[in-house]
Image (tube, rainbow, N blue to C red):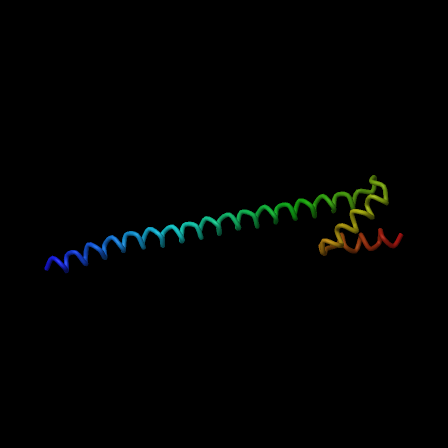
Length: 94
């Protein structure tokens, strides 16, 4: 009977240690996952901001043509696709 109680006590201690380490691994995984999701959101916001800034330069007729053409190169190299792409092709063909 004492051996059985000792084995149960040992099992309980082992269970507590294992549960702690499993919880630690899961919490680290969740933390890293959350951090990576935040980085994706930040990158998406930066991309959108860049695209809108380039569009503002491309469509503004008061900006010199050389700077607009440079913005068009950056816009096209980034792979953006819209009506602005057609406008850029017209600017670059001038």
